[in-house]
Length: 290
Length: 92
Image 1 (cartoon, rainbow over the protein chains, first blue to last red):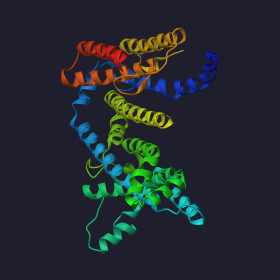
Image 2: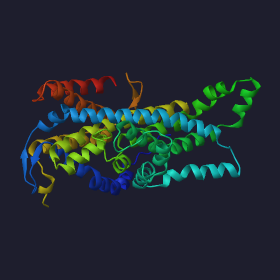
Image 3: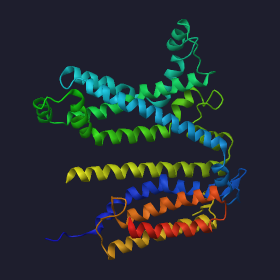
């Protein structure tokens, strides 16, 4: 039987289209317009052509910020994903303790970014913060406002504290969906713990882990509030990630042209990575569906 | 409607009109000649819309790479992008 094709249903998505145009497409078009012009305020613009793009592409300041950003995202993924899986594997499977664990794990996710930043900003202070004060008493020199390494450690630990539970919860959901029969079969075959993990749990978690990696990557690649509140991008430029640099450029220096060119490139990179992840995920689903 | 706050210029207007025109053409093509997804060299299922997206996104990166390597003008990059887009529509 042939399916009836009725394209009129597409009109139902019209309201969404209007909303997205208003909140995303038109502002993005304006950014593109800004990127080829120069302004000194008052909404008066002068044609600049591709100058800003060339300037941003050749700018050592932005190269450095990009390197810091990639390093940051790589480090937090390398910590949060294995740690999240480890936590999920050790969480109780059912009963009261399972519920309690889930609630406790969800707590950090509910705290707004700026509050997390403030918590860690105070927590790490040497004069009044518990962490900073304790480390100082133990004789460990720690000062995130003066030492670049300490600032990095603080920002990374803060992100791990805030977001590992997201990976853990997703991995836990993946683990819960594995039927008991798989474990029974593994037991009959006397499979070791590692083999159960490698050949049953990991493949079954693949889908949710990809989502977790995508979410964590995107979020860390666009991170702004937490490091801004804790370190303000410092000491010097040590923790100035891409979005902090972008805001400095656009609002701090009011260089709208270069900032627009920069944000378009930033957007393109994020679009590319999202597309790759999306394609991999949908193709995995299709393969599993066969 | 006053659109001066959007700071339009002729080149950006042409750029967006081209993309809008492409989308309209793709829509008409989709209605007149329905298609089914196919698998190409990337081993992923793509429709015409997907191929247009891959072409446009790839072209953006080709243009940026050209700008970084050779600077303006971008006519060479445009030719390269058209070749790339044709290749994407043929083989992906």
